[in-house]
Image 1 (cartoon, rainbow, N blue to C red):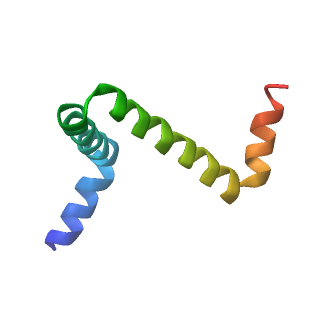
Image 2 (image 1 turned 180 degrees about the horizontal axis):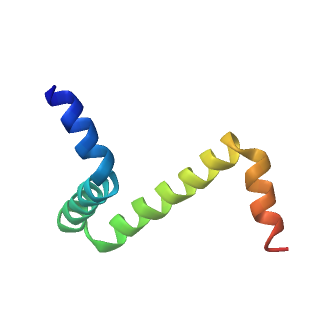
Amino acid sequence: MKSDSFAIWFKEYKWRVLLIIAMIIIGVLFITVGFWKTILVIVLAAIGFVLGYAKDRTEDFLRFIDKFR
């Protein structure tokens, strides 16, 4: 019963929880390694996300790129 209620709660507040966790991690990185190194990590993670997305959904990604041509 508790797992069902947690699943319902998490489904309702999923993005809030995930973004709070992400912001805590970014805050800790800012404090421990500094601003520019943290920005570098975020940029590299974004590049990795884009490349992974392109690899997973090649057709959708190419359609997205064609919109900017």
